[in-house]
Length: 405
Image (cartoon, rainbow, N blue to C red):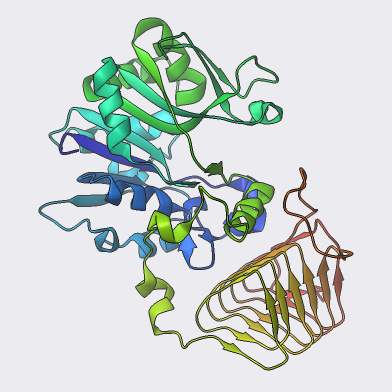
């Protein structure tokens, strides 16, 4: 992997995540109690022995940059391995924001050219999966590809949400459709690309002249007709958490004990110093507490009921409160006799006593059902008053208190 540079696209706003990404870059959104979305790409890079890495930031990068730091958490320690955070100003145009995924890479060609590599591995910073990039690189070299795209089979009902790949019997890509309404193929691009460095520079320079800025819409469809573009079939767990529903479902997958999705086995690495996870006291469960099939991080106090939920460090669930099928971020307080069902609550929120948040379910939610419930999302730092009912599907953002009086 010494001849490979990895670039992580981590500047997305993630508007479909609603309040969760209104105050932070999408890859910085917390996940699975103690992680952030970008931890998966960084951990994959660590375990694949990637030596050179650039993190391309843009939208609200402060918390993401604090989390990554100099990359020491993921063993990017000079002079043997190096990681650089690359804001838009680092590129060729000092004041231009990125116009698309391809434009983001183009603006950082000067950084790419500083590193002595012959391959460029392009990753997304907001996908949940485990992949050994060494296998992908070996495959790319074996088939003599100019571009290799990692792909995975998805349910056909989801083809309109992804770039869809069609291949010949040798796995050479013959068609690429960006989010088609329907397709004979259900092989989706994972947003993981390996380019020959010289080819990447040439196609990006040509695309800039024509004002073409996106890999899926512009670069890949053209390259199929002019270059050797191959599919690398991926098997295993992978999820693009680009929507509230997919984000919630992936968190619920953690507690479903799936064979191919195990964070401990994946050895996902995160920056515990930034989250203060390591200095939190052990969680305390009072005698009347009831906890079923849930993930509870350090520093929590549970006096009520937690069922099939993911709790980040410092969450307090007071006596009589119920938290079911929900994801609760750091340092939230669910006050006495409050009910939280099928909700995602961002950091440092207070849910008032006897308030009701989200779906009033009869019995337990079945995670194997094809459709998720209507999810309720509450933005960071909100204070919900006592005796308030917030309906399922509501997204609260923009106010520090609710109701806003």
